[in-house]
Length: 122
Image (tube, rainbow, N blue to C red):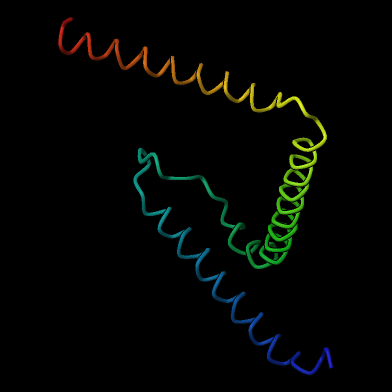
């Protein structure tokens, strides 16, 4: 059952590999045409084009693993935060956030007042 669509999977894999090879080659040529003093110009090795064929499956796999880890850490944070709010009666986190927001707001207001005094001369 798992290998029922293996032929279509191989075709899609091959087409995707060819597409990514063409994209890497085009990006290399576009980069080579840029002037030497252009800040967008990068120093790519020509072998990076061929290496793109082999690295993209690993990069996709690593991206998926990182996405799953981020989701798990975020879920763990939500669960622990809810437990902390219920278990610890003293809202230390809310007091800390209040002090942090007031500090940021005061600095922002002070900077804006200074700018208004510079512009309007009071």
